[in-house]
Length: 144
View 1 (cartoon, helix red, strand yellow):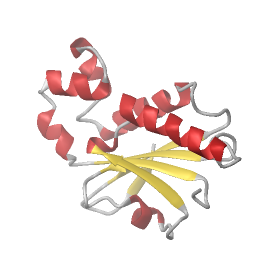
View 2 (tube, helix red, strand yellow):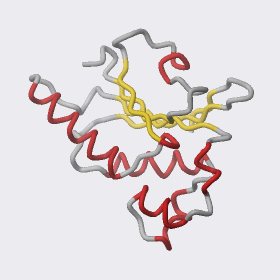
View 3 (cartoon, helix red, strand yellow):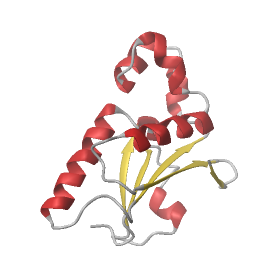
View 4 (tube, one colour):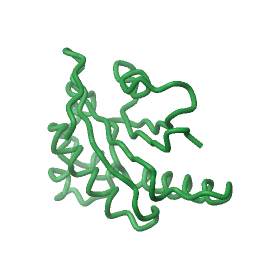
């Protein structure tokens, strides 16, 4: 279990290392990384599985835990913002709903993804959810 009971969902971009940016030491946080640092159906499934693993260890992924959505500007996923079929499949939404994923706007995307986490019934009650956007040029992290 991560010592700080924190899971960060972040992008695979090597410029954005959540452990480094948050000053975490080995074993303090867990990180799930994917394209765009997005909450997708696969990420929700993974979090549900992590809860099962946590419960099998005699604890629970619930109150006292923190989920952080960390995205960044100049993300590669923005290069395919017009590829509606690919994005619909990735996000598990209808093609008509791809605009609601806010691929080109990291602040709006973080807000959307935080809402998805808060609505996920397979996670325990009382999990704190927060969001951040990292600026790859300035090195600043903004809380959303």
